[in-house]
Image (tube, rainbow, N blue to C red; front, side):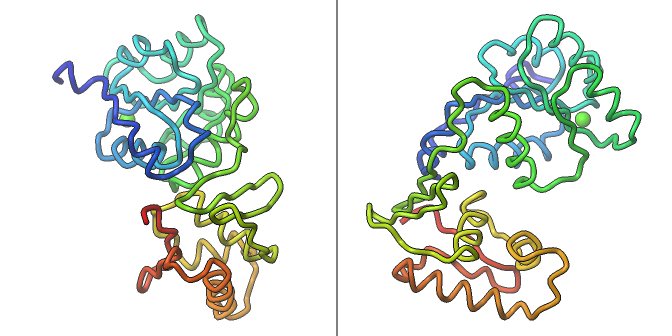
Length: 245
Ligand code: CA
């Protein structure tokens, strides 16, 4: 493997596009040898406002620990096993580690946590789930982290702590469900969120009512946002929050 492929620093310019201005203070070291997994992972994380360094094997991971606020660690690496990387990282640093692995057995999870990992995720997983976990771990472990600061998406400012939304400085009064819906779409702004995901997360997994409810809420949310086409319909899939004007 060419040396330049071992560590890839993606441009953080995308962060400004997504408008999540504050969370960018958290820098992630993404350790993953599979390009097909790493590329969308890094892209999703950058879109969510994190900066990243991508290491494609264990040696590159250990060489690039400096400056990382949090490490996402794949266990199946081509050179040094991920669990050994975890052990070596722990020997010299208390940086939070989230193990990301296809090995889902209970014993593997326990081992990972015993090695000093802060969380453990089993592949496959959705990027939104990962981002939520990264934020949760960062909130607990990165001093002064700003992950709960208001999120800016274009002209929108979404404050999850106070559950208030401003557009161009003017507050928009939303119902609880409308806020949850908007906050969910904003979690991975630019990405299509399926109707099922929305129903499961904003309503609840045991909701048996018609999904027409969702369309009614989308319509009222669009109306309140002034119908600037911010919430796009992704045909036969769901909806997406637009990130560019
Ligand atoms: Ca792997």
